[in-house]
Length: 240
Image 1 (cartoon, rainbow, N blue to C red):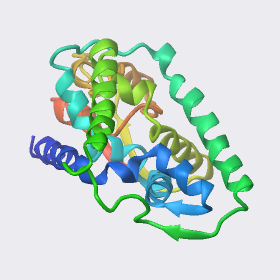
Image 2: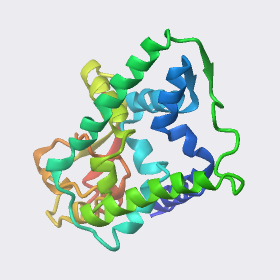
Image 3: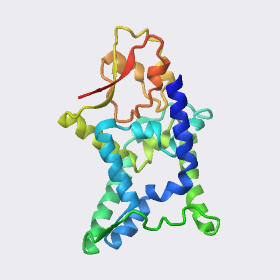
Image 4: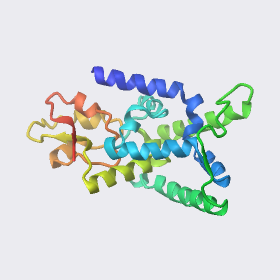
């Protein structure tokens, strides 16, 4: 499908740009900036992801995440369904990190300024070999978890960006904001399980269709289930 070709292209471009954008996804630079009372580029990025999720859920994960496409390639090696019991691990990492950010800001005397380019001037450069170890360390961690855990396991288990979007999604559902969603017509479903087999997050989409509830905090709205359904039982919708 043309839509999936476009999605794969955006994921590839995002991954190729990762050596340049890596510092805008850094959980560490937020802490360093907080110690100086600064709002860094990564702080702005995570805030933007939260705001975007109020209208598009976790679509960023499915369409533009730098390591998303890399993990989907890993599915050719391990396409097992990730265990749901480890999905909460990312929150055990995220909550202490957020608390530490707040604490460091408090100790440093609070907010003093905004510096979107804080510590990002050089990107990953051959003049700074140590940065390669950071880059490949992140890539290596993502690959290990994906190889061991199955489909996009890093998104399920250790992603420090996912909680921002999961919380944003729950808030927009609670207050009834119009947003991008999946809707399904169970009467059209032929129970072929093609949607479940092809789901890049390893979700049981077929069961979701039967229940008439497509809401799942791990759904990244990639649209693969839509494009793999020959009966057109699933589609995008922008509604409350």
